[in-house]
Image (cartoon, rainbow, N blue to C red; front, side, top):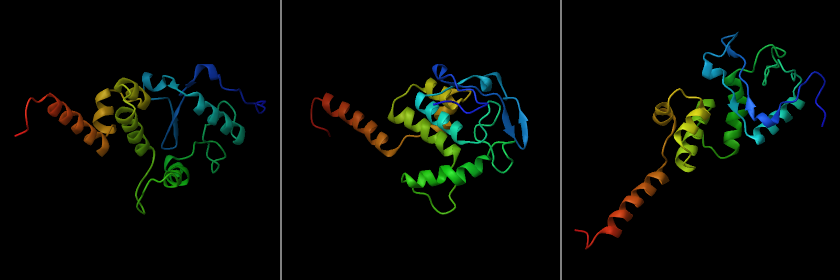
Length: 173
C-alpha cells in the first residue's frame, strides 16, 4: 500500500509516538517538560490503526495534527470533550459500559481503567504502568488511578483465609 502524496510513513520498527507540541486553550505550545517530550511506546496494533487513520484523513501531512478538527480545516486538533462525546462515550456504551444520562465519561476514565486493569488484573509492575500513564511518580498511579474491584478484594480475602485454615492445627474457635 503506497502512502498518500506528502505523507511520510511512520517508522514501525521504532514503535514510538513522538510528542512534538501540545494544544492548550487555542494555543500551540511546547510539551511542558523533558519527560513530556519523551517518546511514547506504541504497540504494533496501535501503529496499524493510526496508519489506517492517516490514509483516511484529509490531514495526513507529517506536520498535521493526528486528529485534526474538520471545523478549523485542520489548523487545530479536535477538542477532547468533542472526541469523548462523539466517539469514546458511544464506544463505551456499545461495549456494555452502563452510563447514566448525563454521566461524564472520557479520557480520565480511560486512565483509571488502564491503571486498574494493568495493576489488578494483569499484575503489571507499577513502574511500567506509571510510564504508560506518563505520571511523574508511581505513588500518583497507585493512589489516584489504580483501583481494586470486588473480585480482587474477595480473592485477597480467600488467600488469607486459605493460609489461616490450611496452617491451623486444630478447629477454629
